[in-house]
Length: 194
Image 1 (cartoon, rainbow, N blue to C red):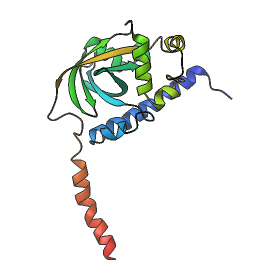
Image 2: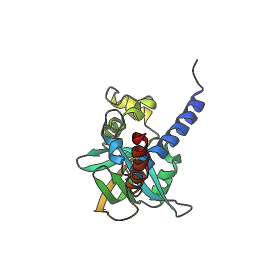
Image 3: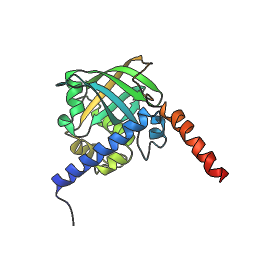
């Protein structure tokens, strides 16, 4: 029995939304590097901080990406309707959290670039399991198949402008680990004495 394609798309969207909440929490706890330990399986994951085009509030969205010749590329797999994509189109100034640092940057939609297929394939490979969840096998697909399936995807180039440090970045909740350890150690020792 197969699901209605529209229902299947909605279920994938809900599942990825919940997964995104988990990934964002991992980054905030200082464990973002763990999200990138197996790129072929989990994918390469970064967090984009962007500004809401309606609200003006700062938002964070985990996305898969690829680094090609030192430059960062990602894709909005849900196309122009993705909220974070709309926000970036309205205000391209972003911050990105990578496994090797936190950066300010400027995002540019390059969906019509001449080398779109090459870059899209790299991002899809960098997506790990997520590409397969959307029915893509970027290593085996022809350029024509890839172009057809990803026609509605938006391809973004994020040009890093300067390194960031200070409060409000990845690991902002890392203080929880020492506090939790200090609270749980006495319980562990008390249990061992019995």
